[in-house]
Length: 261
Image 1 (cartoon, rainbow, N blue to C red):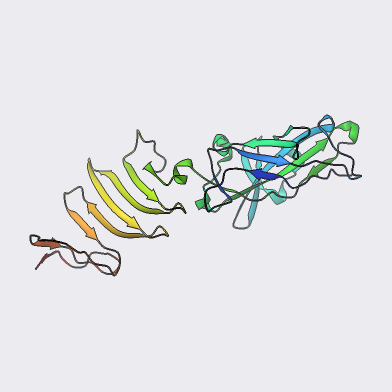
Image 2: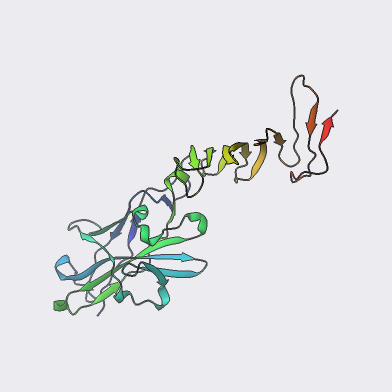
């Protein structure tokens, strides 16, 4: 007779407008309901040989399970859960969900939780094994709801971001950014080192994160002004003659530079 294990609940602080998205650096609670034997009798802490949850991830139809001992992901369809060590539950008697566990993705370095941009979605399944005195029975819950992760920096509405993979004190590129409520960048100032000099790009973006207008200060000292496709460069007030680079609708240079007459 197997143990009957209910679907676990994930409790976490989601981002505004994204109910299944949370940050890697914040804790995620796994809450498990009461477990019973097949005859309806309750299963309690004194009867456990194992009580915890297993971590799964899914992308493009492939579901994998985390093997803590080997520090690797394996196809879930060909993995015997009895061979795995679940992350432990603590038993809290009297609680509506007495089996409780904690997961801090950023602290789980070996599991390499991926950013939501990669398409990975994560879920857990609660796993229990009773002790020998109760017949060494086991039970695996149905999957929990799925959750995706992003970094704390990527969850902010505004900030300064170094080049990917770099720290702020060891980077050759920084970006000052502002995002909308959906965490899409709507404006930025990018400063990048190139051959000991700086390239500076001031850009704005539409609500989907697609670049629109841009001003570039090049390491050579040149200045480029690029409006969004179909838009114009407007100068208000008097100006001296200008030297410009024609471009096509996509913003690609066309022909040689000309004086603006």
